[in-house]
Length: 418
Ligand code: UD1
Image 1: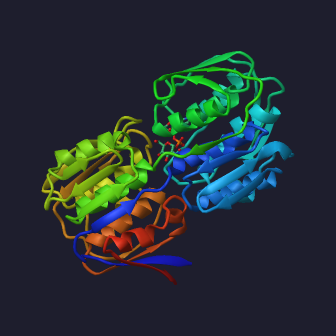
Image 2: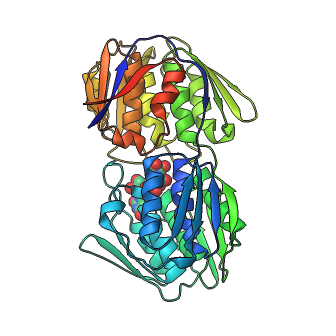
Image 3: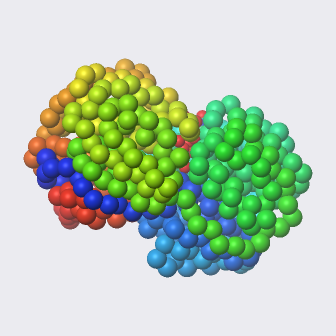
């Protein structure tokens, strides 16, 4: 079992950090590649576990896939299977994209119900509703989702909830369907736009990605191409918040500042200096920052994936802050661990009241999910004494070289066997 060991209260983070490719775009684009039987190259992929597991799943289905230093060459010409195995699928949430991609390419898919982060209930009824509307027969039995779709046909689909996963999955199933599909109340995340750009470059006809109405006109075939994945706005937000929390001065390179508008606005509201250039963001912390209220919402709202991180920053702020989690009802599992580190947080339903400023103290904590794990790193940097984070595999699922990147910024952090 590997653990992260942090010696906290070690001064502000300073320096430059390069942001990796977006995990949540990559985990959609890799399955999307099997919609074509021509070779496809995907660049700027983060070197993280979710990507390697997904690549393994594709190989198990007869797809050729080779990884070199952030680039994945995929040749799905020899795709020979549509049944993904439980052992691999259970490790990542995004395995549900195999449903849309395999249904679109082979007319059938068998995929075990997805794993990934435990954020409370995570239904996939909207994915199933979309696939069914396109003419697929979907059955869920013995933990398997089985899709039979000999001929998918375009349809008008209104999503009951704004869902990133359902929007992308329906897009994947619809690109080669007969006729036109319209997704209304679609999610607008940049990762959806990146996936649509990837598919369009392969020859798909998708319009409106990034708005709440996406129109897809089915095409017979898709070709090959090269695509560069967008930067990871959640990784960028993580380092921005870490810089702010430690009162540091950090320059983020290779980012798309527009994707971080809600985070930049919130940090500025707290009195933190954020300077924006073409593909760079500089954050200069302010101690103590102002308390603020934060409400998570689908993009362009404040991202739920940064909720646990901003909570740590708010423990340093002067006054009481209220965080309202509007996306995942069970996403406060990090609170108990933060309280063990001395945070004063009270949760009621979907809201958390954070009292600050407090001096956190180091403690052993377990990374309950990917972003919670990252928030414990930031808490560990602020805490007096040593913090040991177990279950680090959650963190490695989504953050490339997280220890090295924090070390370069001056953190006293190391990964140990223990
Ligand atoms: C994606 C991201 C995740 C992020 C989340 C919200 C990936 C791989 N993961 O997750 O990091 O936290 O978006 O930005 O991209 N819902 C339903 N029925 C469905 C689908 C979703 O009720 O069929 C609900 C969920 O329970 C949740 C809300 O809709 O309350 C949003 O979920 P969704 O956008 O689908 O999240 P994911 O795609 O799983």
